[in-house]
Amino acid sequence: MTNTAHNTESPLYVDTLYQGINSFQWRELFDIVEKKGFSEKRKALFSGKKINQSENRAVLHTALRNLQGDPVLVDGEDIMPAIQTVWRQIEQCCNKFVGITDIIHIGIGGSDFGPRLVCDALWTDDSVAKTSVNVHFLSNIDSADLARTLARAKPQSTRVIIVSKTFTTLETMQNAQSVLKWLTEAKLTKTQLSNLLYAVTTNTDAALQFGVKEENILPFWDWVGGRFSVWSAVGLPIALKFGFDTFKQFLAGAHAMDQHFLNAPIEQNQPLALALSLYRNQLKRDVKSQAIIPYAQALNLFPTWLQQLEMESNGKTFGLDHQPVATSSVSVFGSAGTNAQHSYFQMLHQGTQVVPVDFIAIKAPLSNLPCAEEHHRQLIANCLAQSQALAQGFRHPTDQNHTYSGNRPNTLIWLARLDAYNLGALMALYEHRTFCLGVLYGVNSFDQPGVELGKKLAKPIDQALANPEDTNLLAGFDDITKSRIQWFNLP
Image (cartoon, rainbow, N blue to C red; front, side):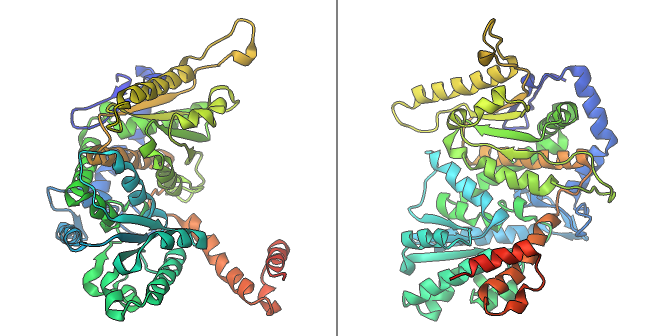
């Protein structure tokens, strides 16, 4: 094993030289992951087997970017024709949305993070044409998010996309109702309203009842988890803003990474290298967190997207065998360099805890300004310097305050340029890393039961907040929650 994972099939370059793992240690790690059934589980991921055991579902986000259309079977049925139909629907939407000034995309979690990240990232790519439509992402149930969105949109020339797998997500449906009221108050007729509403969901009946026309409903499937859904019709805003060909390039980059992950030997497998290096740091250094630092302002939302992907997937106490696990997800944080250097890098360099870092760098400048080359050179110099400083450190002969311990592991991921193809590959790289870590931890990376309890408890609390005169509604709460409800309801 060289300390880099690069293969001609992959668009990216993953440099693990500063992880400090020698060839013997890599071999030990490969043995560990193979004993945990990695090769067999990787094959099962792509073959449509129901590896999401708790929900008895296949996990086939990779099929969403299978542009060749090779058959993918679920319960004996090829799902590719249905996926290809959605591709045609997306392309038709791109052709229909003419004269539109605004798109309001309503969703939360996996229905929001992915398309928001991609739309934010691709604005730097001057090689693709961008439509004049303004895409607004509305996720938070906080009315301030709603107010800001509505203040920027023009109701007469707006299209609304409601994204909810079940069409019951509290935040999404509350925001959708409020946007619908805003449109109604703008004197739009029922016919106009039905023409401007679109839905991405598995629950067609609920979307129809809401007022979405059948031809404006784009399907979702239970074998696609929300945090893996940007490749589906959830990514419709990407195509509407940057064109269907750009959306296909995004899928193609992810597909290229899929093929690398599926076919590359474990010694050259990039997602596996990322997973094994982090796993080793968890075992050997007891690390609890990881920083993801993209040296590209356009990727500032990448750590936010990755937080859900990794922590919702692998933040588990119990494994597939229903026994407690020894290790599970780290806490993920990060933001764009060089801004991050002036925030928490002090802790990364000299804090008492070791925090592994993934640096993401782009070879090509990220704008066409006359000064872009100079800016980009300095940006990359900072990225490489921070990586070197974390790994090698510096011992001042007399002043401990200016001593850096070094030996702080980090990885550098290079992209040739930040375009749809390479962005797709980068996001798929981390999706597969999450899968590999799930194999190492022994957990189901494709369910999320931990998010349900708070949702369940919120319903009776909301009832009590809405009906302060009904003291009987307080009976089921603990004393602390009861006192907080009473405080909120004070005049």
